[in-house]
Image (cartoon, rainbow, N blue to C red; front, side, top):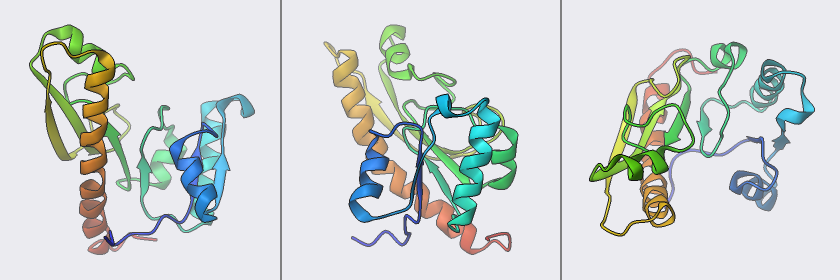
Length: 173
């Protein structure tokens, strides 16, 4: 199935990530930007910004990226960064342990959200969500697997929505 978008560059903070593997297998330009290689998060983000802009990136997709973007990056890609989060935002926002929080809370459902990244953590406009029931006997691992499956389904939908937005925008670079 043709999704209507091309991956032109991949930046990662984990060389063993799925995104890095994807890029290597397809010969896509890859930047491995471990925080340990930079004096600050801002320096890392400036390097990532420059790499992505240098490859003509129009939309940044944070999938598995576990860092908060700094102002220089947010400004360069304003309204052009999306993130997939393992909860039904605004529930369980702001952390990497959303699945654990959902399971511990006693709620009967959680899910996945694709949203636009803004300076306020996990608070940008929601593009698409999918609910995932919490089943009796669920463990963190079983629930996380079902949430990941929902993320995989909705991320392409979120990308398509942004593609349509960007196609109608005069600010696309």
